[in-house]
Image 1: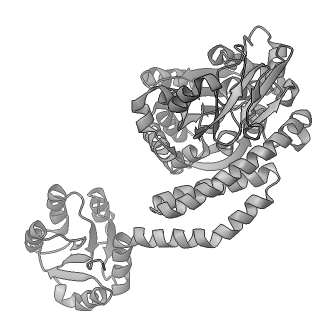
Image 2: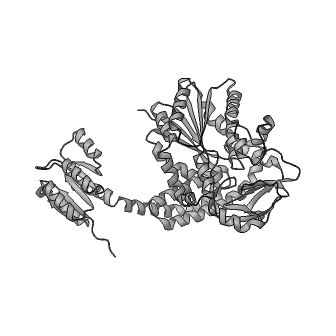
Image 3: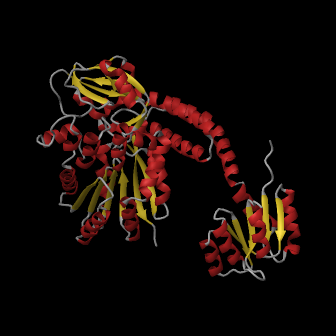
Length: 522
């Protein structure tokens, strides 16, 4: 069924002069009603639905801004284009303040009016058609790039582009094409897992061929920027690339943003990846330097209790001097005022590096698996992104970043690892000593029923983690698999299928952003 013509109300005391404009719009499929004053316009608007109002500002009787004020009270959602002879900034500012959708200055040509009307009424449809056409044209090359990928940069670049396509198509409402992107992402995960299984042990033995990894972040992005001015170093735990990309538009008005992708080390879990960031070293070397700090393989809380000391050691090692550091680990926004006060105090003391770790995302991921309410709030990738942006926009972190922008403070914003929505179980056989994580397990005589779903090694050096007991095996899940025991198969499937987990091998967990934020001149 063809769509009914869009209906426009044009309010102008010189409506007779505008007949060519009205005819121009009608020839392009719009239905246009015209009235010469604000009172008649309000009467019509109370009885008839209009998709758009073209409103003259300077009219006898009620001025356009007065009509707009009444209109906004009676119908806050009606779309309005203000048309005026006045070029005064005050008129434009007042109109924008009352939420006009566009603003034209007379004399406006029929084409200028049509452009504004089309942008407001047809813009989303045009953008939807365009993004669909763009994706269809790009799709064959994306498939080729997947088959050609054999370097870290290839996989990171393709994954990054697929994330962007997913967000663009989602915004345009192209759900059918989203299935195509998801299918290619599934193929990419499989290729990526097989590739990582082959190259990762080589990276651990020869850093010359590896990309930027977790232990490289401070030396690459913090140390070169130490010049006496403060740097805000933010680590948002468990942040995927797509979560970062939906937060990015909130930051671009305040900062020039340079985005770099790095690879989280394995396992993609807090005790390993985040410790490596702050230490600038792999876990085996951290355990060697600080044996008392490394209590065990499966105690995430205690293993990350010394990040501030590790960061200070790394900066002293790299600069040859003592670098002043203020470190905070933030679990909740409830103490936002106190946190802001402590950061201000650190700045007043000329602290060079203010390191803040925010655990909100990781808490959401872990809580989600145990809570039906959180499971519903973050039931899939799209809802997780929506939750991320909603939290970020109202968070103490965003407040601190706004303050940093206004005070000219540079920011390095990153994460330790991402997460993946796990849909498929894979059975493992283990003794009681095996670790509990569902995406990676360490233990004696540990093996997977389907070896194609996991990366398995008996060499701790393949992962650069501390050596375990004799006969220890190390198993890391690939793609979107999660590990279950044969004796608890149904229980684990019911509990953890469609859960966001981390620790394994997937682009979502391993390929994550570093953003260099430079405040824009004010």
